[in-house]
Length: 78
Image (cartoon, rainbow, N blue to C red; front, side):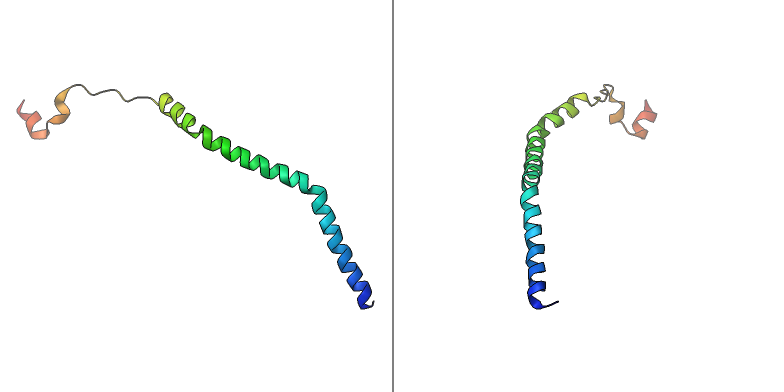
């Protein structure tokens, strides 16, 4: 194996890599575009998701009596 053959194999290998990249570049570009679109959609819809989560969360019952204001000593005096 002389140096010309090794150089030819090397260039062939690089040409095959470049060809495979060019062959799959539309797929790679589409995947990148889909990732960007998904990120933008997630950022745009985040406020609505938070609003829906806030509206669906159960609200605690209001404690209307004032006994929680008194400590143990004040309750014992009553």
